Length: 260
Image (cartoon, rainbow, N blue to C red; front, top):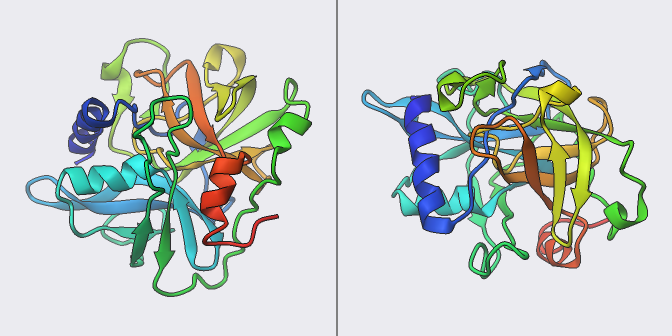
């Protein structure tokens, strides 16, 4: 089932020129540390099995943040029925939530300068008993010294436990929420580049983690500053994540939630 998802993500790359990233690599099971991080799930394979396609974050009781290319992939591959879940594992036992997806006008149409690769799912009912993650203030990543900062990536994507090999050492069968800590590489106008090389003590994301959060701080932080969008194809060097503190990102998000 996960192999089918990996192949789907590779096909989406050819359509959108955005590499859908990925699962948590060199990380560990999340347990209940990030209950506001969930997954987009659908049925894949023959026979069909329910499993995670992308990841995302609850940013209000009724708003789930993810990547635009995840929603666009559902449309491109005629996947008409999909759900949001905060269950781990995200499999046939998961609690499924319904909602309506919203993608910015022009998302992934303008190249890599600022692809507007974010989307929200407005849920049909509020998620009870879960405190949403916190969004950043405008320009936070420009105002904060990041060189010594720790970041935490969370998602439901494929896993990697060894640097050896390419695609053959990626395990596409993960259905659990996982996390890994990362260090800072650089910041650009719309992007935050994070280290996911285990040789330097960092983990990162892989296929199925697209749309998932990167929190500023260690595993206890709930301050989401960027989302997983792209990175190196074999999930062991660099996360190129989409910033949420920019005017463009905030203009879109402000239509659905109250911004800090």
